[in-house]
Amino acid sequence: MKHLKNPCFIYTILWCLYWCQGIVYQSDSIISQSVAMLILCMSLFFTSKYIACNRISGYPKALMSVFAMVTVYGIIAYFTEGTVIKGKMADTMLFAWFRNMYLSILPIFTYLYFVQKKYLDVKFVKMMLPVIILATLCSYYWSYLTAIQMAFLKTGTDVTETTNNAGYTVLSLIPALLVYDNKRLWQYLGLLLIVCLVVLSVKRGAVMVCAMMSFLFMLRSFSHSSGRKKFLTIFLLIIFSILVYDFVMDYMAESDYLMKRIEETKEGRASGRDDIYTTLWNSFKNQTDTWKYFFGGGVWYTTKLTWTAAHNDWLEFLIDMGLFGVIVYIYYWVSFLRLSIKKYLPELSRFCVFLIFLNMFMRTLFSMSLDSMTFVQGMMLALSYYGLLNSNNVK
Image (cartoon, rainbow, N blue to C red; front, side):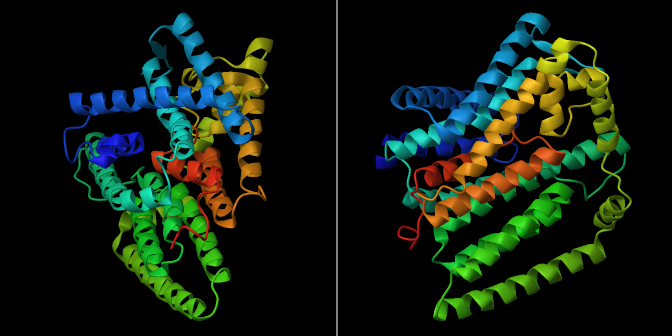
């Protein structure tokens, strides 16, 4: 019963329940919509309390600047476009802009408030991590089923392999493994599960970022081990590498779809992104409207120029919010990077922040990042921001 008095517990459980839609209950049902609305209301409420109780500076200030910008642009879109953004190929509900941005950004402020009020600590993350992993598996499997169904509707043939966008969701769990920093076996079992699921997702960007994060994770694990623990770490590194290698080789031997994706990568094919990038960049270069050049065309203006959104945060901001939007976004990422090297933070907290930074920044280059941060990343970022993730409390 004591957990029900903890708003952080209720908030986190709601997020886990939301990720279980499609498996535990019907997707896009009244249940999922109600859960999403509860999450949004709690996020707005606790974000407001955090802002009211603190002098915002550093990374939170930069994040708030981005949040304010996307909010203002969303409001302007409502008065100029209405509830629907009419695109070149398809229309998009403006509500999706607010939902995606708010459910991505606000959890960071919410968890910062929870840490400050001592509702969230490392012990809480350890308790909730098994539940979070189960919810992630549900989200992953539902995303797979949805992708399979979409592939069938597109081709008219049954397929068993396709690209699973939830590879990025699974990838966001890596920083959470740091709460078991003194339990190497648990860490590497978790990392093995994450790597296998990301590879199975056949999401090229996720696989690349996963490789980078895993390498840094293992490098730090080795460099911060000593004595008997170093021998254990070396042993686990060897076993982990062998298992991952065998898994990837077996999967490559059995999966025609994976080999097709590898060949497409070698040939430089990027799922239509090249055409999207070229179209959008040429549109900006040839822009004669000074207002659009500096302040953009508005929410999802990219969909008016090409068949989809930019799949690149920098191009999306440049076209939607002009040079002004890009400058604000640069300010945000510089503040994020500076947080990862703050000397007053414990080394483990800095490393956690850097892993999240690396993941999200790399994603800006070939996908959408700002509207895709998970509550797990918000939780770990909040813990690290206040230095609660350190070698003294991860035993």
